Length: 208
Image (cartoon, rainbow, N blue to C red; front, side, top):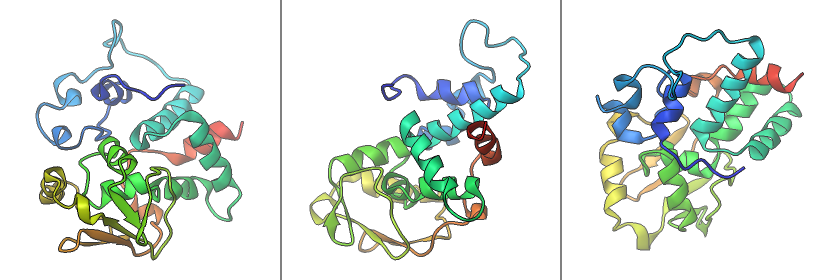
């Protein structure tokens, strides 16, 4: 399946809540969910009853939409999380959070994950002083993500960092604004991941 390229606000309206896919716009009254609080499409304003399976499927779709991950990628993450000791759902979200594109977004270098993915693909970041242009690259505690010297003049980076007060900095990362680099202080715990996702429903879906 190809990557989703249509209007992002439709995804939020489909889920009935903000997924913060468009960055700063999501914090304004121009947000699609604020303006039209019903699902998109011809029958969007009709009330619907969801089965247990539909609720589980929607949670999985919601997580995929938030992180910009395709179906096969998401399934691989789940199977890897399933092999670890502990709570599978928490491990799944932890792995998604430790993706390079997500960390770039969490550090404030990008206004949303889609923009972060593009910046990584264009080779603007290094991990432990080595150029990495793979958005799905999984980071580990102690890794340092830095903006390349040649990329520090990008106006978009400065604008994004200046607007960090919208989101705040997660407790599991450290940001050095003077040198434009961040460090993974520790792996995120479930309480550190503030997302409108019930990961247990995703586990139930894949466990059938």
